[in-house]
Image: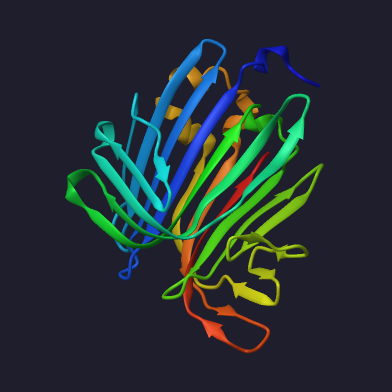
Length: 266
């Protein structure tokens, strides 16, 4: 049932990541929300380095949305002292993941493969292969018929090869996999493997990036936290990175790395 109080909801979210040769991971978010009496932008950047605590900075502000101009993606956010620059190496696709009378979810895979540089607070710079996407939701995410969400991206170490996946489980299960930027029918996703068009990536030893509740994420967003149903605050999000080869049906092995996520809705 549509809740009239959700009318006017619009969330635009950018996600950019980067994994360098030394195993450091940088993940940056930009989000803009309008809903009820709210209207704000939020930015966050995190740098994960093996053996050291995560360095994370986030802030409310008025930073401009990341800009994609041809093959160049740029985002400068003085509020969190972050600059993201990326050269897109492979074109992606746009997919409508969900649509109903209550709203829709539009996913734009802006860069399945990119050369990315993230300059974070304190002068830390992470450079390497990375990924970028943009989501636009016109209904609150807790209205989606999802109990579990599996998301991930695999990128080859040297060639412009990629797999990107979204797997929804719940009342309306669905799976989307982009293979080298194009939708691949019949692809499958499990907790340990993604198979698409004869290519297979197995997820093995993992570097945990974070495991947290939505309540932790919204801790600094008091106006929004007060509007979100209490049960939704218990949504659990786990994200990790790993080195994993892609194996194709002809026996070729392509070295690469994945960043993946599992979200569970109570």
